Image (cartoon, rainbow, N blue to C red):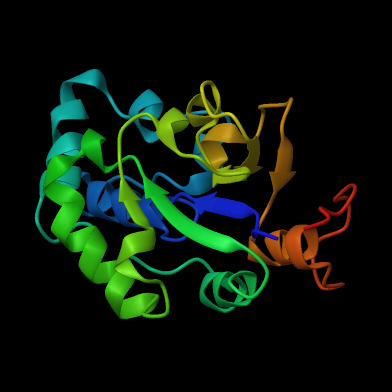
Length: 191
């Protein structure tokens, strides 16, 4: 019997990219944007259009993806998932091609138990052959043939129509049946 496959996005799922983006912007422009300001919006929606190039420059800088904070419980839960699922990391890195090396090094440092053969840098995640895709961007579910599981981030808090996980404890509850996840998750997955 083959294991079911779970593909996991990096940014805003494993790595707290948004906090770094906000911190750099606030530091350089003397503002105080918070994650709460972004409910239902992307950072690009609240930053003036004439500063969008600055947001892009942050993403393109060599050090941006190198030291991102890890989402709480991600390491432990992903390692536990490997016992019952085939786990792949699927990053839409083609959106920021300069991020490949930094993202790969970040994964090596923080998730050394993931084999390089299970790291996929792509654009459209519809190409990924997995049973589940955990992602913060519902756009990635459009052509994905498995089930999209929406990982909560400020920009997607108002989106409905997908099974949702709010954190890695919810992922653990959903896929491994642990009783430590948030209340409100429906029907556990049966591997």
